[in-house]
Length: 162
Image (cartoon, rainbow, N blue to C red; front, side, top):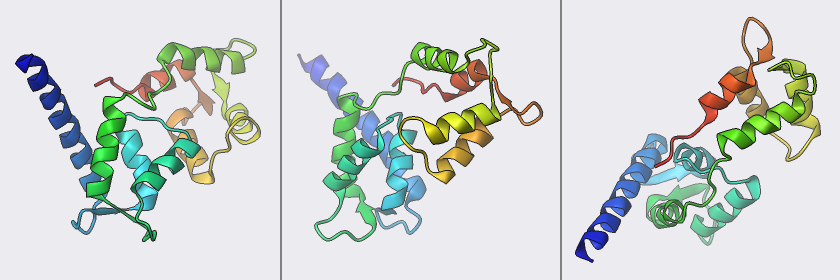
């Protein structure tokens, strides 16, 4: 029983260390606060992939009564610890991502063109911001061939489990 408690405490300690390190990267003033616009990046860097709606709910949980534009570490840490312990907002598994790309690749070429990717990002599903589109294009499109070799891209996207 004591060993289980020790293991649980070690896990929480490790998670909180990871959360703290991720938060500190964006705490530019070293005052235990970060810009609210950075929270999504911090959460994703910890291996969580919430939808925009879920991210909005998470922000509502940690924002001040009177929003200041900043999130305080002491409010973020317990919420994020709980999210990680409950393994919420897990990324989509590699095989599911591959099947999704294969559905979009109707001719079974093994890649999508940059234009095809742009079309799917702007005309289907949850809308992407211009910044998200530019990030995905720069990360996924082969610079010389102007295609998305999606098997390589998926391998790069997969988050290591903790």
